[in-house]
Length: 324
Image (tube, rainbow, N blue to C red; front, side):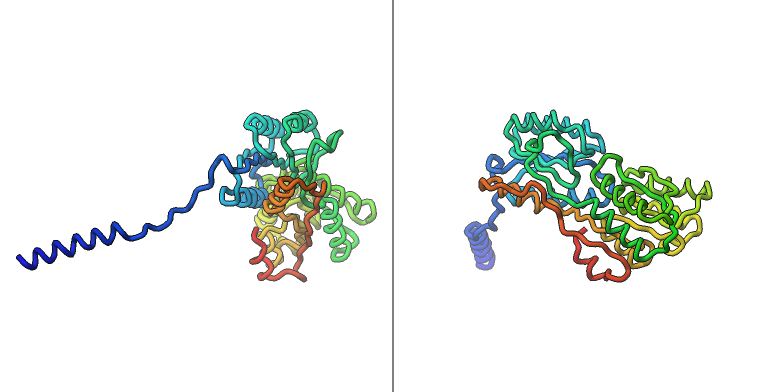
């Protein structure tokens, strides 16, 4: 009996101690009403670069950082972006972030955003509008400079006589325009450079592979593939390998974006040059919004510092630190 009585007392004591013990603090959830609402119209998810860009935005505009992000994927269609912007206006967002599909056709919808008093920040690609006050600012890459960088590398590292295949991105996008302009200017300077093929690969691996496979079937001879992004370069590499050719040796490959996977192909010698295009714009855009909230005026145009990589300057350590 004594043992039973003692056991009952111990059980009561344990219950009492558990009831009195301090509970683990639950994380404080941000008040939805206090969050700054950002509507982001993204081009799509066509490439590793685009996925990295979206991820950067999602991380930057988290609830923990004081934001609520409304993300709309346009699936490469401008009409979907225009609809998204109008939805953002109707929802009364605080800021609109736009990664435009093409450069033209934005005047009307951005006028509507301005009338609603909502600042519009452009990322990655630029636009052509009659009145530049329709958008607050832009942050992104100097795509013509990227094209010039690739052309200069060819001048310094490849023979004077070249047969070039040009895989373009989405026609009318800023990246396509700038990188194409860089190559076209170089072709004018070098009579020994011949453009044997040029077509849009839409920044996708499947289309890049399809175009190169077609050229190989037709027995078109070429020395260089100038691919306007990494994903098209991946497709080109797959097509060359299937045909028994060695990428980077039998055919030189120049690419753009410099994602981690592509840079490892630079290390292995399958891509000869990769020109950087940094997608991690989330913190940059958040810094701009915080400037605006303080009543400051951000720079109208902000170019990201970027470089290029070949076998001479690239290491595994650089790839590991890049973050995309």
